[in-house]
Every structure is written in structure tokens, then in C-alpha cells.
Amino acid sequence: MLGISGSDLNVNELAVPLVDELIGDPLRYGVSVEVGEDGSTIIDAGINARGGLSAGVLISKICMGGLGDVFLTAEADAAKWGWHINVSAAQPTVACLGSQYAGWSLSHGEGKGAFFALGSGPGRAMGSREALFEELDYRTPAGRATLVLEVDKVPPVEINQKVCERCGIDPEQLTLILTPTSSLAGNVQIVARVLEVALHKLHELKFPLTAVVDGMGSAPVPPPSPDFMTAMGRTNDAILFGGQVHLFIEADDDVAEKLANDLPSSASRDFGRPFGQVFKEYDYDFYKVDPMLFSPAAVSVTAVNSGHTFHAGKRHDQLLDESFGGV
Image (tube, rainbow, N blue to C red; front, side, top):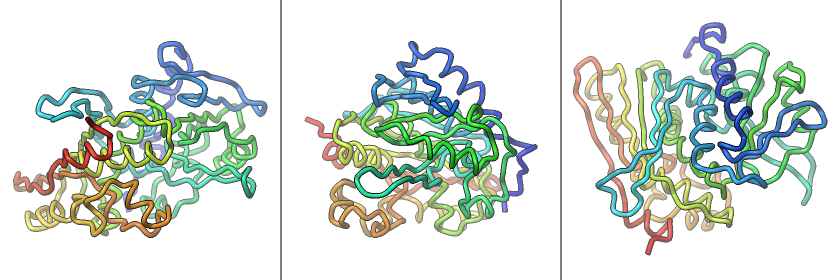
């Protein structure tokens, strides 16, 4: 168990200044801010509003519960896709798994009119019933809550009500940020999960998360696509084929070396084709995809006690070109 109480490190409170910055300067970030009929705040970062790269960076920081640094840089040695989103977190397990991971399943209705979304961001630590939080032994008390939803339409008010009920808050304390995958803001905030993807794979590998001291990651920003499936494939491939992560762990050298070799996406049986192709072959069923595929392309693991670093995997520019539509 992680064993960090909400009074020690509250991701919802830490995210409040970032949320207020987004709300307070919608023209700068290309977002629209509305108060819903129930009193909750809805931020559109790519449905009808333009959104953009700067919005995506700020929303990524919000997703990490105010515990992450996120910025864009140019990689001089990259063949074509040189602009990268870079992330780091001094408390990577809390920032990534306790906040950023899209693990809160929210749905309402049935049939063609049904609404479904996976919620990410600090509000999860307040109200989500994911078993992960029992493993982390981490929760935050009721207060202002923020969730990020990767959707292309405004959720029905019943979703807001469900979130408020689970969190034990009034609607006026809830902020929902909407980031379609096809938008630039959505692109950035998804690819900014490169470190989170590595930590989630650690969890899948049953590696003790308490051994993770620090971490940082980088991945190329893909071009957006108006087609949801294409956009979703590109954001996944940015991490699978171009993501780089460096983890610092308290462990023996042999453990660090094995972890480095197990982590890259190339260790998966489904590696080698753009994610869109893999997903289609599995009839668009995520549960059929090898869970070991969801990993960065290249990994470095440093055993902090010895100072030795182990490397595995590499960037795959040809596969990035195939996915991103490079010419």
C-alpha cells in the first residue's frame, strides 16, 4: 500500500489554482466555460471551443493533480515528429495512478442515446470506487473536485449528479473538463500520460509501487484527426512507438534490469502494427488487446542505491510515420 493520507497530499486542492487559471482566462486557452443547469462548471476544450496546445498542457497538469511538470520541447534528433510533450512528477504514483489514470467509468442511458466516458483527474481520488484506491490506500476528503472526460459531447446532468453523490459534494464544487480525442488539447493531455502508462504497467507486472522514487517521460505530439478512431490510434502510438520513460527505483540491480526489459511495448505479443490495426483485428474490444502492449517504446530504470541504470526498447520512427500519416 502507498499509505499517503489525503491530509498529507490532496490532489484536488493542489489542482485548484490550475483549474482557476483555466476558468479565469478562457480566451488565452481557447476554451469556453459555462455553468450548467445544476450549478457545476463545464469547460469545453475542443468540442465547440478551439482548445489548443497550451490548453492541453494546462489540462495535463490538472490531470496530474498539480503534482506534475508538463511542457513542450523540440527534439533535434527526431526524424519528423520532433515536438514532444515532457512530463515529470516528484510523487509519480499519486500523480499518475491516484489522479491522472482514466479509471472512473461513468455512464447513463442505453442504446444510441447512451453516454459513456472514463473520468481522469483528481476527482477520482475523492469519489471513484476503483479498487486501485484501496491498493494505494489513498483518498482525499470532500471539497472542490475536477474530472477530465475524453468526450465529444456534453455529459447529461445525471452524470454530474452521480459524481457529486459519490464525492459527497454540491454541484457548485464540481468542474468537468471536456477534451475530445480529435482536438489538439485532447491530443496533448492523452500523450502526456506517457509516465502514467509506464506506472500502470508496473502495476500490471505486480511491481511494488512503493519502490518508485521518481520518474519522467516524453512522447511526440501526433497530428490530430477529425476521425475518432484515427485520433485514438495516433495518441496510443505516440507512446507505444515514441514514448521514453526514465524511472528511479529503490531496488537491487537485478530487479532494475529485469524491470527495464519487461517494460517496453516491444515486449508485447501485439507490438509491431499501429494500434488502430490491432484494435480493429480484435473487433474494437480493449479487453482482447494484450495489456502488456500499453507501455512506452523505450525505458531506462535507475537503481538509486547503486546508481546503475538499465536501458531497453527504442523509438520506432517507421511505425510513427505509418500511424501519423507522414509523407
